[in-house]
Length: 152
Ligand code: FES
Image (tube, rainbow, N blue to C red; front, side):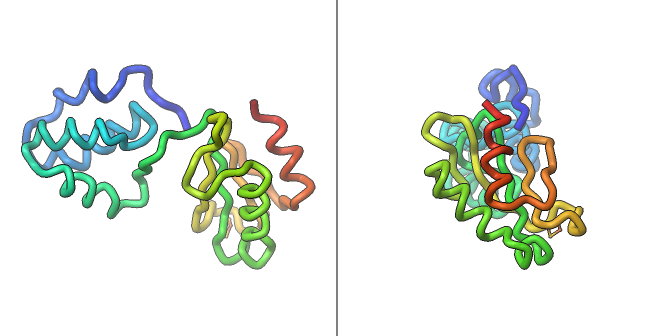
């Protein structure tokens, strides 16, 4: 995931101080910091004068927002129907085990974050694993190790 160089803390005040700014502020926080941090939730809450639980509640409703810091590389394992029947779940379990990370989180060395997606739109290439912007097709457990070794 690419993160902007200016932090959310440095640029949130360009938004109108009204509740309609909540989603755009969350989007800005994620674009600048890579995720919605507890500090961003607090800043938005204070800025819009709404509770932190409301900010968090709205953010957690949308799957576009993440609440853990991203790693240097983001792995998305497709578990849409075509990928699921082709072994997508096994790929995800293998990555969890080999990288010692659970889905939705980041490895302790911050090298990878791991997530699942519903469909990457290239079902004929199933099972598919995306690392950053690279889509890897017809992946198997053996190919996974090679793929991961290309990302430091
Ligand atoms: S189901 Fe995986 S790309 Fe469509």
